[in-house]
Length: 157
Image (tube, rainbow, N blue to C red; front, side, top):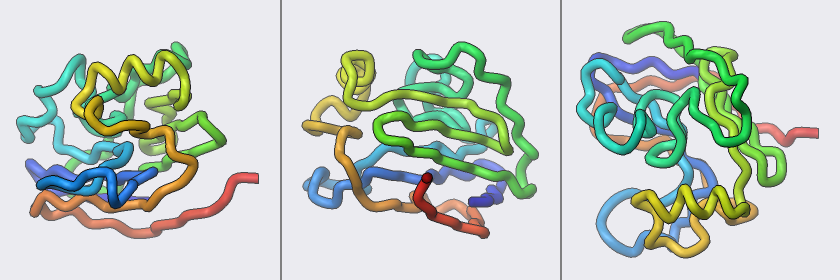
């Protein structure tokens, strides 16, 4: 999908969302492709090693940081008030994030490394986080102006 964010905006694309996982305050819980103005939003400086910045797997793996693929390239951001393309590919337990055609995150779920990442994150309290076979897709809303277009969901063959 394409997204366009305004200055200071925070949003995201959540996937493998399990509606009954979070019974308290806050959003439904799932893996998240972070959409964020890294320069002007304070969340970009929180977390660990940039794991809350644009295109990251929120609170788990920073964009351009992967335990699976060391050949990831520097992310390319077209800028605020410009259209950017997010792509999330799920192939079994392997998940890849792309930002403007550049692979920026790749990981494998249901592994010892995956569980170690989850155990060190804010998601540790939700049993089986990120390991579900399926789930909902959610566009995160924090009240900031973010536009989406060309949303496409298709099975990989």
